[in-house]
Length: 603
Image (cartoon, rainbow, N blue to C red; front, side, top):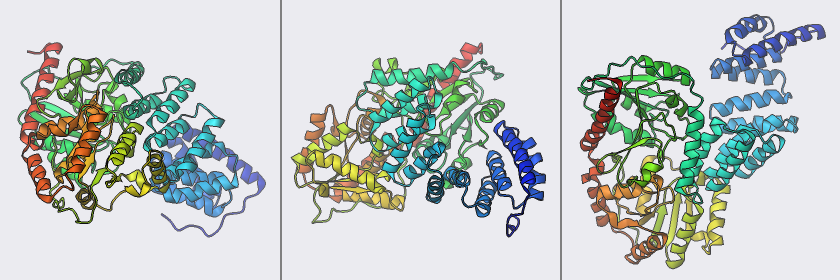
């Protein structure tokens, strides 16, 4: 970047008026997506008026639209240097910083914009987002509510407020907020997508209601697809099958850990593995997955380009890994860029999309025939568990409990999963075991207002806050895993159980008491435990769950030998049999491909 000029240039009123007219036209071009035209018009103005704050402000907006974040930041900061008291400039810089996950840097600029212009209604959403991302939960909630009061059809305000409620264990509120917004913006795809995710955590909804929400999303999104999919694939059931995995989480993420063994072990004589990473964030895990793949594509140019690339690569079976979680690509799957599409691993429910052919699950998570009625996809049940777990090689060893430590229950699940019914059940366990403690750890508990909320929940149920230790994120995975040495028994959440946390607990020698739910989301831990052959930790109802916890507490703190035994049992189980898992999933892929070939007229 060139050296910044020392001070702004002096323009006459007439020159200013002329400059503003030109900048207005350029801004209209940017909004219309005519970026080349906007850039051609802006460059002469940047050369002639490098010290005009209005020019720098528009240059920032253009660079942001061109996906040049550093240049966009440079010009936004320059505009503020030249004109420090214009609220729109602080709002623009704050928004840019938010988009780059620089939340703590964004907040002062957004607060400054609000101070300069308290009536700027469009500021409430980015300001609320900055507060939410920096742990100021009450302020965030207030900002989003103000935005919705001014405009009940503000999709971003409604979605962010619902996300805030979901993230702080108020799933039912999130569902209500989203449904209210949909009354103002019917069939909005973003809100329908979010509603599906929130519904999975809501302990007041039945599986039938959750299915209806997903079905509504699927029908709405599918109806927007106007062009029927056409393929030039050779329908030969014996040829090599090209399998594509598409996700924003092909990086250090639980999805990547679960998919890694499959990508590494698929038979390359039968399958070619392609990975489409749609996030700009890559790391060492991305590099390992790329090294294990036959083809790797970084897809950062939007759904249309990703669809075009997958179609051009002639992927035969496209795998969806995220469901309705953030950054998902379900609209891409609605357009069906590959002949066969499959959902697996990442999402604990149906996608709701009729265009997705199959979902890979097992007999425990989705027992027939009821689960089939709750799925838009055909359910493909693989033998054993639908997941494969690779324990970390650098985990700490299980240790003997400290002599003076009380019996400790624990849960390291996401706060979204800690439903009111879960908290109430945990409180009843603590009331029945008055000398026991509870350790909860999840990233949101790093925020003091959230810790206060959780402590108040337990206090209202008769539990002294001193008995419930709350922890946020640790500095490393090793430190996270070592915390399992501080607990004797893990308590699962419901109606959405753990997955990674259940596996981690077993690897650290800590059993998890789980409640067998009605839907897939409530039965994953049970499937994991059946694979490790410890079904005695599965309860059929809340009373049995509570009694199992009381009985476990009566046995005292868990010694290191028992912990080591469970670790070894996990390692020797089918849950960690990577080759066996790959073979059964490969058989499912093979059958799906043969079915398409038959339908398409192949041999």
